[in-house]
Length: 116
Length: 114
Image (cartoon, rainbow over the protein chains, first blue to last red):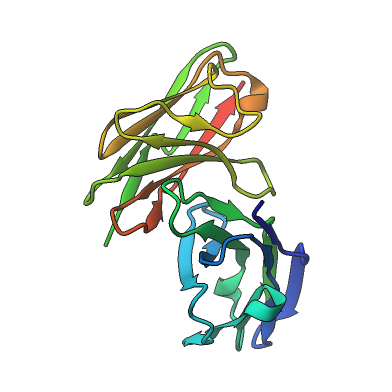
């Protein structure tokens, strides 16, 4: 069975601090996708990244970076120099690749608050 | 880019009535659409998967007679909450998958049952 664990339920930091959101996953599939989504108070999900399990390279996009460690089944997300606008709930998620269903399974989310 | 819309964005109804929520892929054809439910301060839970022209596949614990899903075309899926009750109040989010196995989420529909 697939499972995504986000152990941090809430994080609060002061603006400009760096913050890392943890994500640990379980799957029996050898090929899978990992995702991060942002959900601001409006509720609409904002797609941040999709990573194929074949690609273990870390990724950087502006202030955002992702660390994929297959050996520890982790896909952590770091925000550098956080800003108030980063305040939101962040979800890590997992799906298989080849199944006709390709359901996305979400973690429980981490509520991030950035204090001015 | 790929856009998925939902209508309505919010709805308030009386207990016992039925509510229909539409999910449309605006600029692509969706081979599969998914319906999620999110209670306050909780995660998204998959309710069902629907493929165009066939019956939906429901997740364990989701009542198929209460949550009717119709996927009549490659761009439209509807979720009907029948005989809604206050415990059905939630945020309902759909997603649509294209031929490249990419999924795009709608903006969600907030349902409040009085």
